[in-house]
Structures are given as structure tokens and as C-alpha cells.
Image (cartoon, one colour):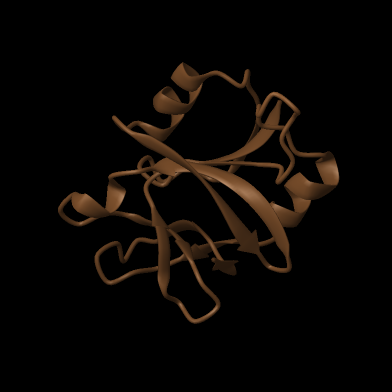
Amino acid sequence: MQVIYLNVNANKAPEKLNIKDELQNYYNLIECNSIDIVRRKIGKRYFNIICDDEGMLVDGPKISAISNLGEVRLVGNLVICSDMVTEDGDLVGLSDEEAEYIRQRIEFLYTRKYPQGYYILTQCEY
């Protein structure tokens, strides 16, 4: 399935990847011990986001998603896929149009803790 992978830990630009919907793939990409799948609004549309479930519990988490007001929404690496799920509950990949929609909302920003800047998902709301 096609996803957008945002690797903030390595300061990489967002990537469009084709991966299998398998738990181990998510653990490898997110680089964590416990993942969560959350449904969040990006701009005016909803998407499923695989993220680090314990990311806010570590010392000095690296912000990966902010709201329109700059409020922290998610930390650590992210895998973003469609809002759709199959009848079996499996995640669904992004269309090319959805992937581009997300990429337009990822910006190179600077934080106090990371003044060199890195890519952050913006317009992320509950």
C-alpha cells in the first residue's frame, strides 16, 4: 500500500513508500516499541496515522505534527495512510492525489530545540 513516511528522527524529507500492511513494517519505520493508529484531520480531510504510542513519554520528544495554531499533536516518525479500512479492518493505501495533498501540508520548520529545522506535518487536528 502507498503511504507517506515522515522520518523526523533522521531529519529526512517526506517519502512516498509502497509497503505491506504488516505490524513489523510499522515498528521498523516508526522506530518504537508501541505503535498507535490514530485518525486525524489534516487540512480538511481525515487520514489514519501510525505513530509512536509512547512518544510523549520520552525526554525531549521530537515534534512531527502540529495544529494550525502550532500546538503539538504528534511526535516521532509517522506513517500516513488513507482514512479507509477494509472490511477486515486492514489499512488502505493513499491514492496519488491523497499523497500529494499530504505532502503539501508538510513544511520545513524550525524549533527552539532543533534550530537547524526539519520537516513537520502541519494542519493536524483531532
